[in-house]
Amino acid sequence: MGDHHQPIRALAADVMLAVENGQSLSQCLPPALNDLPPNDRPVLQALCYGTCRWFHRLDGELQTRLKKPLRKPDRIVHHLMLVALFQLRFSQHASYAILNESVEACRALDKPHLTGLVNGVLRAAEREGAPEPEDDAARYSHPAWMVEKLRHNWPEDWRNILEGNNAQAPMTLRVNALRFSRDAYLNLLQEAGIDATPTRLAPHGIQLARPVPVDRLPWFDDGAVSVQDEAAQLCTTILDLAPRQRVLDACAAPGGKTCAILEACGELAEVVAIDESADRLPRVQENLDRLDLQAILKQADAAAVDQWWDGQAFDRILLDVPCSASGVIRRHPDIKLLRRESDIVPLAAIQLGLLNAMWSILKPGGRLVYATCSVFPQENHRIIQRFRKQQDSAILVEPEVQWGRDMGAGRQLLPDPNSHDGFFYAVLEKPES
Image (cartoon, rainbow, N blue to C red; front, side):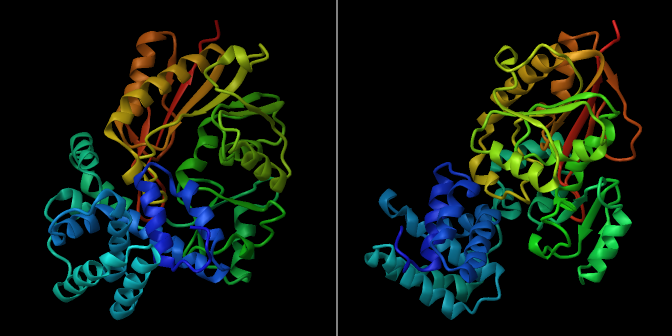
């Protein structure tokens, strides 16, 4: 794929094949983008994100249009047709160009014997228009197991969750409170001609009417603001931070919440940020550097306390656990292809293990905030319930907030097309003695 003459659609098909084989867009898209001149990169990105977002609907249509599935070595042509179908159904691109360029991309992928098939399928698709979706997986464009699970977990809300997952997420900023008030930064945005409003729930949040490149944001390089979803920003409002506390961010990469903690209280004794991923830790340092903030970074598995902990207990712990990411699908549509139903039980075991490990290093009188970007109760309030059966001294704190739904053991935010992602928070305190 290294050659620079690959048509964009061929590159998109290549990326989609990689996603189907288990790579995330954040892993396989950057190398493909680097193969393109800068002005073509947004086009490839939009094709890959859009095809993932509508994959289950487009795939449903394509399967009905193919007499028989393609052989495994030709699977990339299946993805080439999905990319073309995405454009036919969801873009303003001229259909004759989509057809011609897809046939050309088929040749570029070394599949000249399939150009007739590609041409025939896409001509029929263009002529006949989009069919009625055959089932809910195609209708809502999610894997069938996820539709079923959401229907079961959220009988009143599952359709809204699925539809919200297919909407474009807004771009939300967190103003660095050490540098600017939210109002002052809103004025700077207005002067820069960027349309924005304050977030409803997060005290330092600003939502942009339309996404912009970060280099257009006033003082971005000097640490005035960060890009962070509104729900993720809420962690600082329930951590109850105060000067001289020792704070742990247990699964820190890429560092948005670590930085939010440091901005929320200027005189913390120290913030320790750990993450298992050697690849992702430099991102945390980059964010700290840009914002001119200090934290102690460690690469470690948070649960393996004896391997990294210095024996000093923490006043506050933020535990944002690895999860299904079912609450952030609108930002990461590849989750629809990557996540399996069989992932959930092992994830829940990791979540409970982390919670127990963090509890052991929390100071008496200290507070732990458990967070996920999931909408599955199995990873959320049921984990807290399971934990409290094991640690009956743990005090469940009901934070005095207006947001989310009270689940009896924590608060659930469902994705809101006009503002925040799906998120869960629970607050636990350790008794003084």
